[in-house]
Image (cartoon, rainbow, N blue to C red; front, side, top):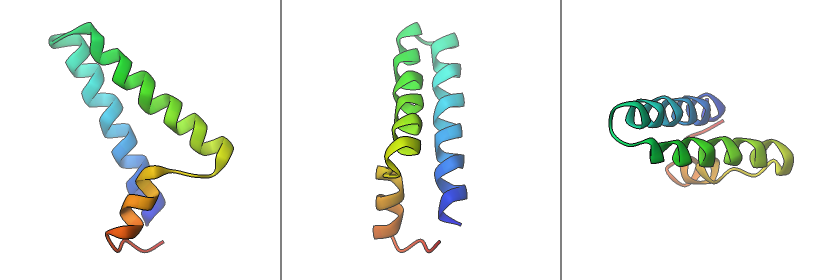
Length: 61
């Protein structure tokens, strides 16, 4: 369950930042890159900040 929530939040952040980059300011692409870098880091280190936040909020695996 927690894994699906993390993926949906990451995907939403990417899509929203792409919309903002298209219609507001191109600098929103930096946020897209940040989310992508965090996904890559998470796959390498097996540590994810959003996973820890959800854990503290009481979301179970």
